[in-house]
Image (cartoon, rainbow, N blue to C red):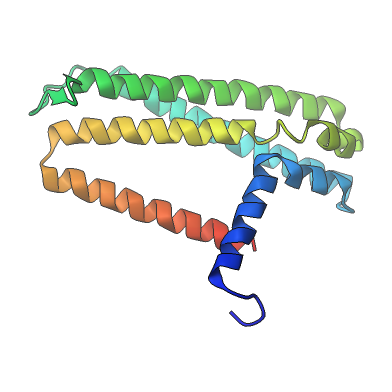
Amino acid sequence: MAGRGCECCDIKDFIRQAKLYGGGRNWKKLGESDVPKDKLFESLQTYQSLIATLSGLISGFSYVVLSQEIIEYETVDFVGADRADVSAGFVTFAFIASMACLIVESTLYFYAAFGGEDNIQEWLKESHKFVNIPVFLLIFAIGLMLIGSVIHIGGLYSDVVYYAIIIIGAIFFCLYIALQIILLR
């Protein structure tokens, strides 16, 4: 990496960018930039629509999983508790988190739309800390859904399938983090 320094500098850049993203300051900077108001408004609404759609997808999937018939597992015990109860608990919490995401995102979408594109820069300056809250709720819901699914799968299939799914999930998670590091440079 010519001119960029060591690998740890890239990680520090990633951490700095992630902190900016987590606090919504990237939206604040966009609100203060020279980006035309119509493009900024369109980008914000597209972003909010995407998060709301993904949240609706996760909550719908959670509902389908919760409403299925009772499954008999090969191994009922999971860390001292009933596997079905633990799996259902994680999926229920995923449903709640995705519904919270949907409600918060819909509220933010409403207020951004209510202000209109003429006031979008001011709205982003004042509300930038709230724009990414639905993303964190969505990530939390996806994590809970995946944990619940892994617990569910562990009771139905062999250990080889169970551990293969965990390893593949870890690989995809690492690839996602690597993608974020590359994109936030």
